[in-house]
Structures are given as structure tokens and as C-alpha cells.
Length: 299
Length: 271
Image (cartoon, rainbow over all chains, first blue to last red; front, side, top):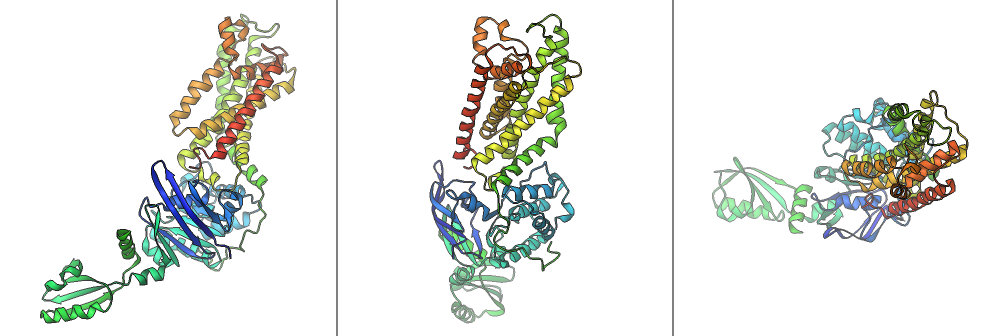
């Protein structure tokens, strides 16, 4: 099967700044893929290369097998992009904006699908409202709708929940999940790592224009298999031998970082030999955020 | 959101057959509506400006100046003023649309779809020409009631109006793409377009100028647009209408090729 997205050795230079450094990445059809990285890592540049908004200095990118430069018409028809910035055209209403966007992709008589997208994004009541009069959350919904009007098989969401309230965020993810179940490939960038952990099957992490981690979300969580031990002690002190493991000191408790579960036993033994009693003990799995921080520090 | 959780998202992939003509027409239609929705500002205001020029110049000089034999100064003035409006509004349409879209960021809505650079250029150009024509027609409708005007060669007038607004529409696309700030575009408008328009013989015949300024006027492409357009009304002009048509047509093709090259390169649009 042709990959939904295939990026080969893509680099992008802005003057002396290397925004992307030989990035290669393949995303299969139907995947829910996360693109993570700190600000300035190159996530948006990579998305813009795919969308044809940025011309790569070298390398190639394909959407469903269509080169984004040589075969840009097919590539762009296959791609729907929700941009990061909250942009809108103040001259038009919600429905006009969607009808125009659909027409730009060469589609006539697309009213049925436009109405369905508006319905699913709770925009039907605002169909005749001018874009200027919408709240930030509503404008974000319209941006999502605009990316979907031509029914693209591949959807890229560039931080779609930035500055969005919790209710809309959850509703948006419910809708995007359904699109993914229906066969759409989803590529997501987000600063909310718990979202990526909950939604994405695979994740790539970028730093300074390079991919520093690329694996399934499960593997990333498993490979970085360290764990945390949360303790409440009596008396409230740690022996010297364990002090180096402390990552967090809370009132009445400690959090220790362990390389793996086998170290739990030696910690308990150390406490016992020091005459310290354990009042509470909890073993915690690291989440994606902690793994993200670890990888970014190592890279 | 998701009021109907069973609602599907439709079959994949796209079920409609997409047509580039639909894309082109939609972009043109959007650009048309963009100025039509604010017609008080984009159509009525320029017409009012022309009427004010007409009142000030025509009535203060009427009877004292006769540029073409048997043609009243007010009648001489109207085609020039109309052409000035056509040209300025064609330029303003494409330049301000692109400039505003770039500044607000909504240019992505026309950069993400699969437009070729020719379709992009054609839609913006056609909308610029359309606005120029609407304003020009408005000027005639507003002045025809109190100025005795004859249109002897309408095809010549139409050819110059179309070619002239095409030149200015293309120039507006270049200015809109190139300008990153409002004052850059304003400088383009105030220091290039406005002086060239005012010094193009809108208010006078260049035959009345000293030889040096006559020669200088021949370097101004807008002079040929105004002179050729006026020929369509009176059958008289400062230079041969064929020469004017060749210069205006040549300018149009040269600017169009340059704009297409600019769009194809992605200059300031696709970084």
C-alpha cells in the first residue's frame, strides 16, 4: 500500500539556519501519527513542506505517492491542513468560507458534505455568521471544517487545540478519532503530550530540525522503562545511599527515579537497614511527557 | 459537537471529480464578492471622487479651454477621469487583496488548494479588471446626465479599458506579493501609480506641454492608456492609437509573464 506520507531526506535552510536537517519519515495510511518537539524544532516547517507552503531546500515529500512539487495538484487534493494560527477571512460568513474552500479544490455541488461537516463541528447555528463575530474556539472549528471540505484522505492538524477550552478540545478529538476510524490518516502536532499519548499510535520527536525518536507510542513508553517510586516514610528522611535517586521532594514524601522495577527491592532493603518504616508506597509509570523531556535532554 | 455520533464522514477517497475550472471560477467569485460586499468603499467612493474632480476642474475651466475642436472641456475630461478610476481601482483590487491576505495570514486558504500559478494569476487579474470596469461604468452612468459625451469608436475604448486595467491588475499582483507592510504598498501607490496617473494627460493634452515634458510623457505607459481610451470617444488623440495599443498590449504581456514567473517561483508566498 502506498504510504500516506513519505518524506525523504528533506532539508530546509533559511539563510544560515537549518530548520530541517535531512528528515526522513514514512506514515502509513490510516495511522494516527504524532509529531512532537519543542518550539522551533521544525514541526510546522515539515508540515508546510508537505502542504506546499514551504519549498524544501533538498529532498522530496509525497502525499499518497504524489510528489508535493512535481504532482502538486494530486498531493494537495489528498491533504487537508488545519493551520496553527487562528486565521480567517473577515469578508465572509462561515458557510461562504466553506463553500469557497470546497470550490478551490474544484468541487461543485458539495453542499451536502459541507452541511454535514458543519453539523459535526456544531457550526450549523453559526452558518450565516460573519467570521469576525465568532469566538476563538468557533474560529478554530471553522479551520478544522475548512481542512475537511474536500474530504482529504490525509489530515494534518498543527496544534489544533492551542488556546482551546477543555470542552472543545475533547469534542474535537472525538470527531478526529472518528475520522481516523473512517480511514483518514491523521498527523498531529501538539504541545499537550497527554493528547499525543492518548491518541497517537506512533510518534516522531523532532529537535533542531532532526528526528530524535521515532517509534510506536507503546514502544516509546516501554523502551524508556524506568519507573518512579513514591514513598511516605517514618521518620521522614532518606538514608544517604538513596539520596541520589530523589527527583521530587514533597512534604511528607519522596519520589525516586529507578532504572527498572528490580531496583524497588534494593530501595526497600536500604530503608529497612536504616531503620526507616514505609507508610505508603506507590510505583508509577513514566508518561510521554517525562519520556519527551528525557529524549530532548539526551539528543 | 458530535450531536449525531453515528454520522459517517462519507466514502473515501473523494467522491466528486474535481475540476480546475471550478477552482478558478471560485477564486474569481471570491475576489469579486470581496470588493462587491464593500461597494460603498470600493465602487461608490471612487465615483464620488471623479464627480468632485469634474466639478472642480470642468466647471472652473469650462469655456476657457478647448483641447479638441468642438469638444467641451468637461466632455474631454470625463474619459480621462474614467480611465484614471479604472486603472487605480484595478491596481487597488489585486494589490490590497493580496496584501491583506498576507498580513492576516488567510492567504493559506488559497495557497493550500491545488491552484496552478496561471489559475491564481488569472483569477486575481480578472477580478481586478472587473472592479476597474464596474467603477468605470459607474463613472459614465454618474456623468452622462450632465456631460454631453459621444462614443465614436467603442471597440477602441473597450480595448484600452481592458488592456489598461489588465496592466494595472498585474502590477497590483506584483505590488501585493512584494509588499510586506501597508506602508510599502502605500509607497508603491503614492509614489509610482498616482504620479504616473496624474501626469498621463488625464486633465490636459500633452500637446499643450513644453517639448521636454512632452518627451517625458511619452515614457509614461499610462499616458498611452488614457490617450488611446480617449481616442475611442473623440476619434482624436495625441499619438496614433495603434502605437498606444502596441505599447499598452506589450506592457500587459510583459507584466503578465513577469507576474507568472514570480508566482511560479513562489516569491514571498511559498518560502
